[in-house]
Length: 178
Image (cartoon, rainbow, N blue to C red; front, side, top):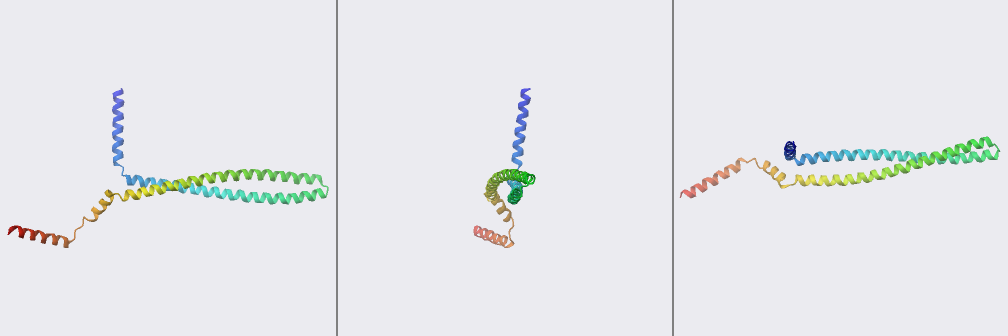
């Protein structure tokens, strides 16, 4: 059974080597570029969404602070009027607003942290993408690829070039016959 396992591994290894040779590096590189660009775009969309949530939390904190200022003025009014039940209600509202403000500050801090981490991830991805683009440019500029393009471009021969070559050949022939 171990011989069959070894043969199976050998076949798979040879098959993988053949597949690797069939893959064209330029195509694989372009596909990697597309995948990285898509991942970067998704991260950037996520960062924009986090930034919107962060801004919304800041706005909510501002509203809660304004409400606290208003409630403080109402509490002073209640205490001046010696209306303890109403003062209790205003204090309850103040405590609720303070709890909501604390929760909002925690959410905003978590969003800011996530946004910072995502910005670093995007920056790293952009650097890697730039590096990959530079490698792709180098691959396009390799002598094999450039030589192939030059060869393709030189496959056409003008009629004038043929006529000049014919005249040279006739001249050489005439000189050798003398």
